Length: 594
Image (cartoon, rainbow, N blue to C red; front, top):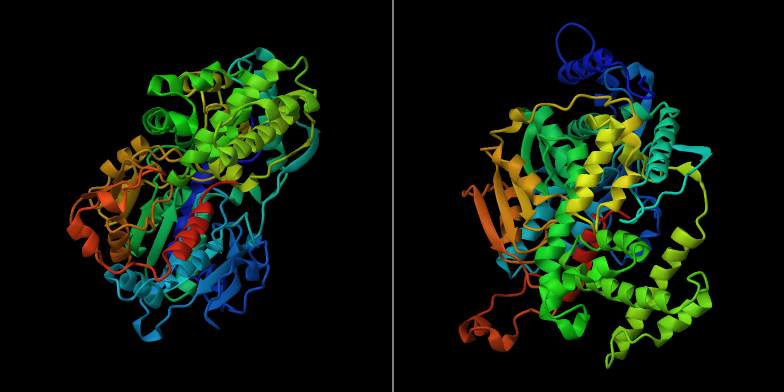
């Protein structure tokens, strides 16, 4: 099939090679075509108070006067052909607290692809600024703020940088995401129609081929040089680990301190990464959340055994299961969402019962009356109210999905994410093979596979626009990985596979937890090791295993602690632990797709 977007393979191979040559050059005979970008002056200024898309004064963060600054930096739209014009990159910097101790710049990326990293520096700074200098761990975190300029940026395509938009007048066709209804010829034809139209919409935007990780890695290298560092210091989460690995494979000699938290398998493809998510989320439910619910049958009312809990979802009507899938996926990123995850299943049970009790599911008043009568949590009025409100929200989604679906013009809210996924690595283009893969994943992960039906655009993209560099170049780099055992967004099996290929790397592994985006973890095992690495001290062991923190309601009580431990506890890491926890939670929410 002719490519609607990507250049001819021979051309993009040549383009990638030329971009590498241009990025590397800078001395010798001929003029450097990138010189105007490399020698531009970064014009730091006070940040616009709405640069983050909301008023900054509503964040309850008070940065020191003069330390928080913003700028726009020019980068070539096409790195191999800088004469083609510019993109603009939005950058936010929190300057190091002690100029005399400054070691350089620490760059951040929150993931995605398509995540905006502009605010990361502000939120992590705010959390660590409350560190207690009387605590060794708190003092270590304050050193991080004193010694680094902390820099976040909007990658090309998103945020306050040059943005990508993919839209068209054509209307979307209805897609049944339910386990019982998705695999029909008509439904699959609608999936492919929507994916094809999305790809065509992106093809009409001339910027699309240049929204990819290769360009973002080169943008980041440009920023590194403009901000005065010889080597890159970097903290990347999720897709940010893919970006970090791409950079390290392109420029291994320019890597200094690098932390890759919640890692992807950079030796694989973007498609393989996405296809690893549903099985990871299914395993999280089967091995962590179902046992948790069974240990607290009175609280969750989903069953007293793991088997009973696991059978709740399959007993729900397929359409109820389908509207539950999205919330469950969003609630699988953090240990703090475990109660919310299981509460959504309990609410869906009530909705399912209410729908069965009324003659017409479209009669909203009758459904609401049935939900009002349903006993969600007898004897626990606050929880009963909360579950009923959740069930009402699920019903609103049920109505808009199944009873009153509206055909809307095709518009990719995540245009940059789609472009990066399709431009970075090859995808399955044989449609029968694509469907076979979805069927296999649906059998493995019946609760979480449905989202794959919205990720069909790459099948019609025409192939990648760049060539992924060989990760062998980073094999000996002392990169630090951080990974939780049951991460539902970046499959730990994939993370293990990539880590095994890098003998020079180290890892901090959190057993028993499923936190996506581990650091800061607010413990005495993970955080000191990661912070120390960023400050120049690579952990000696190949792997350090830290014990995951308990789920809500299973925290050890003071009475359960050994007397000596209770009496000799060290100073708190934060001056106001509750405030710090809220700020860290806000930082972590920035790592979750919206």
